[in-house]
Every structure is written in structure tokens, then in C-alpha cells.
Image (cartoon, one colour):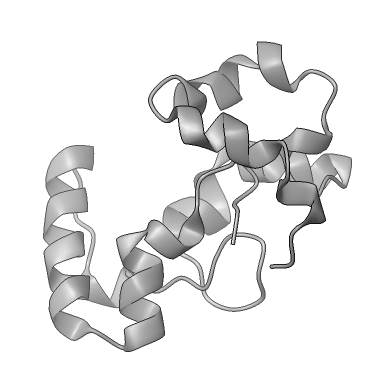
Amino acid sequence: MIAYCGLDCEKCDAFIATKNNDQVLREKTAKLWSELNHTTILPEQINCTGCRADGPKTVYCEKLCAIRKCAMKKGFTTCGDCADMEKCPTLGMITINNPDALKNLGTASCENI
């Protein structure tokens, strides 16, 4: 389950908590994400089935993610479909810290979500 940005949704704690209906992981993730983002994130907001799949999403993924918005607007399966992918500064914020995301984009458009 590769996200628009190339991250693997199946490795995300929100996805795992949703899939396993794991309230303890939701609470742990909400606390960590609240600290990292200097805001309040509640455990009930930690529900996501993947940014390209139907179903619930975290508030960030559904409403705030610039990468997801751009890919959806352009009708792309992932950023791997974009000719400007390698020089995109928005995508670069993800791939600079996660080189696997860029690798995932090479094959993501062929994968099922």
C-alpha cells in the first residue's frame, strides 16, 4: 500500500492501529504525534486505511497533505506518475528523510491499493 508520496502505508502506526483496532497503539501514536507537531491529536483521530484507499484517513492525510492534494488534482496514481517528481520540493521533504519512498514510487503505479 504505497501512498501518493511513496511512503508505505502499511508501516504507519495509524494504519496498523486501524487495521488491528488497537486502542493502545492509537493512544501511543496520538501522544507522540501531538508532541512532534505541537498540537493536540486525539486517539480517535488515529484511524487510516491508507491515503489512496477508500475509508478513514488521519486529519493530516485527508485535509492537509499537499502531496496528496497535488497528486489527486493531477489525477496521478502516485507522484511516480509525475514528470517533475525528482525535482519537486514538496515531495523532497519526504524522500530526503526516507529514500525508500523514492524507490517505492518507481513501482507504485503498478501496485494495487
